Amino acid sequence: MAHTVVGRPVPGGEAWARAALTRLGRVAGVHRAGLALAERGGRRLLFTASDRDQQRRVEWCEVDAYEDVPLNHTVRTGEAVVGSLEDLACRYRAFTDRQTPKTHALASVPIFAAGQVLGAYALFFDTPQRFDHPQRTELEDLGARLGADLRRVQRASTHAGRSLGAEAVPQGAHAATRSLAADPRAVAEARRFVRRTLAAWGVEEDTVDNAILCLSELVTNAMIHTDAGCQVRVVLDRGVLTTTVRDGGSTVVVDPSNVRVDPLAVHGRGLQLVDAFSSRWGSELDAVGMTVWFVLESATSPVGRSMLHPPARQ
Image (cartoon, rainbow, N blue to C red; front, side):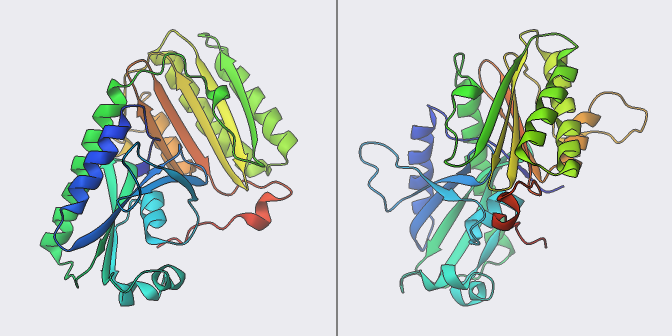
């Protein structure tokens, strides 16, 4: 199974980002390093690089996750992209044309933990690279080490007062949030809330049905694993639908690739459904709760269809 995607920087992530950029800059032949983290799915990534002024604080900027560049492809798919600029020019001509003469090769590698992509890093080399199996294995191992470090930061962070409704909404996007009590009837309430909301936004029926199916599994998990209720948020940004469920006490993270396939099993199948029906999904476990989200890229609205450019499938 391909890695899935998780998380945005957490308060303790400043030290992690600085340490990561320092570690990446020490790789032989690298003159520039970049980091990209998924901003809880959706259309945006948070990006920073070693050649920015990081003296006072790490400077992150938002970039469109659907711009056709190697780093974005890696975050969305979990696939590494490596090669000389000549090799990459066939697929990423606009990107390679923007590079300085100092760059001869590039490696874009996922940062992952527990089977999920938390982001990706990019290395810009000033010398030609072989990218043979040992080197690629070393780069992948580096992504795993960075991911393990970031996951520890996330788990130690506390967001006791964080509300999904208080999070910023991209300009021009639609957003709606609903708080649900710790009650088995909350699953049906969540379905009604999302169905009404997406219908009002003009989202196509097939996408609404998939959203309801995945949402039901996540809200059910929240009700099983916590007694504090949960929040549900849906955001439609230029044709990309992101649905988020945050609870106040779940401590279980499941990697669907490790769930035994049993048609009679009751537990563990929910996230398999989310994995199967969503474009991608991810989770963020902190000190007081769990946030799980999924993305549907085929969502449509009166303006969404013409502006949506899904990533190429390989």
